Image (cartoon, rainbow, N blue to C red; front, side, top):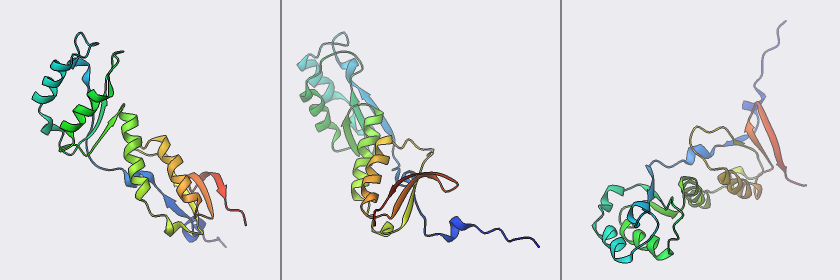
Length: 169
């Protein structure tokens, strides 16, 4: 007589947490100021202010922006602050850095608002292998929140997970 195959994962109290589910829609843009510098290296205040004043900032409506300079120029922080004053009415978020730092900052905001009470006392698996650019730092942030309430935490998929945390009794 054949034994019926039982899906023990489906029957368990195991809850899956997928950071990809929280990935916000919206274009990510890296804005490089190098073209606004004299010979790509020198910030001339008057010319820089003119560029900021005359640029069409409305094209960044509802976009996430990373402000950067890809040359070795030394840029005073006020320059990025000035650009931010022009972008603020349009952009969803503005950070100083690259796309990776932008994604990290976006996820910091998201994770700070996530309620984890539904995971209280339960085994949790934090899903890995995302198709979207979830920053590694987001995994560290969410495990810190989940560790406060979860019975245990694993990483990966239900069929092959890595145990990370088990609440002490």
